[in-house]
Image 1: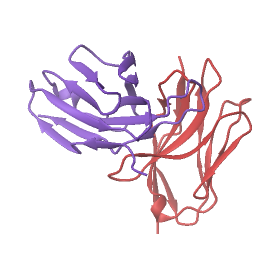
Image 2 (image 1 turned 90 degrees about the horizontal axis):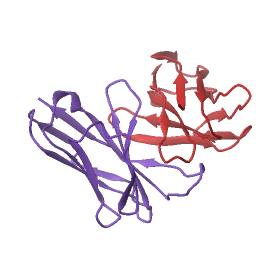
Image 3 (image 1 turned 180 degrees about the vertical axis):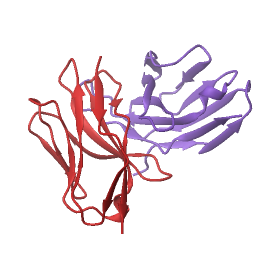
Image 4 (image 1 turned 60 degrees about the horizontal axis):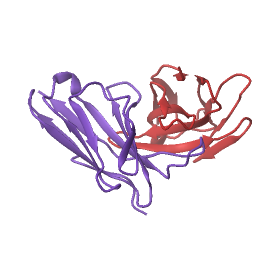
Length: 111
Length: 116
């Protein structure tokens, strides 16, 4: 079945450091890919998405490129801030009306 | 505009009791979804509605769980004879219901259910 694997956390970085959170997927169809973010005490928010191969999704300084050849959708940010501390979820959707999520990666950013 | 809303935000109940969790989707969204998120895990699909009907309830763990959406808008997730293992955050999402992979689900803040 379809699945998403993302790097285990927690990831701890200093402010202004470069962030990469790895995500790979397995899908029988041609999925759209998403990153959702969950800030402490809040619900899931859509961070960015890409619907076809080589598309780059971007938002709030974060970006991820849909790589069909490596079945990956790694999340990157050039300079993290303390306010980026949250749990990040990679997800896929193939039109089958259920989104498949990874287990989440917790990010801590220190001042 | 208003996002997906869920009530209550927190619910504490005793083992064996009945609970109802409510979801109010984004206006104009025909599709509605329920997910369950256990501690340290990603959300897991429970049920999907297109309009008033449950198009896919394959994620409901057993027959103690039931959901309705009688008028095609607000939905209620009902759990009978609650067990401690039902403790989790229950998330609701809605979308335009496009029949392809470009559809995007928008999530509510969740209801944290604790069964003592």
